[in-house]
Image (cartoon, rainbow, N blue to C red; front, side):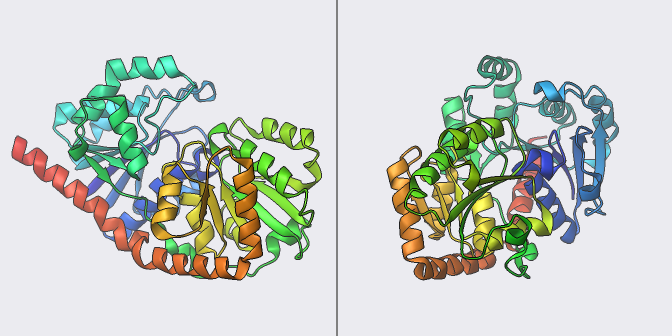
Length: 390
């Protein structure tokens, strides 16, 4: 099967979880003998990562206005139409993109089925709110209504689709929590490398965030809670591990204001085997997102045997509760967060044991190898539906 995946960027360092998931889906689909085709812009394109997908075809379009928050690819239309005989299904990643507009008309004209996998990009939030609503009036509702199905990662994602338009039928939404590439966690690194690199003694409790440093990730709340917790626990360090996505300076200023700059470490992006070194060395990983589709980075921590805390109201909270993989807290409640951190460290051996049980469950039930067929099943049904309609 020729499967077209489309996202604006192909770089885990720059674009984070969506690029990471797309890469891992394509890796698993290659292993099953399918032929992925990735359409991406050239902005921050990761050529080294692309080499790890030898049986995936890449169509890289020149992209403009990326630094302004728009990714416009004028050559994309010509490239896609040249491929029309080689595409069986289109898997759109995220929602309001130039790519998806072009792909929508391409699929409609050539009677090619497509699915939309929004990855939490449906809500309006605050940035570009009016532009997003305008996009939806012109293209967005058409894209959603024309899809064979809309993929949500949790019930939170289902509600996000339903809230944007009363015309969307719930039966059209498929819940497919993102599978995990457990292969990279089969052999974990020895403990100590990350701590040695950043001069963190082994007797210091290391609390960590892993991901893009963006306002939506809630690191301001995490820093506030850590400041309160560390008043009575001075043997603790907080590491913010990830690239700046517009929120790092604010987080640094907040740490300075709370007089904990000497105990809050900003490492920048860390990927590959070094990411697992960081997760192995952490004593607790926290993700305090304002909104999150699923427990992607927290489950990576669990696969490294590290306990986690996530914000309760999110898709990540839903995932963690379902698997009993860790603790959840109310976003913004500093006292509750301090209480949870205290509980974790006061009962660390029991918490660690529960984490290892969750790790085993993820490996046996949520791995990419075990669940790649769920994507293929959706594609096959979409293709069959299109054939039956023609």
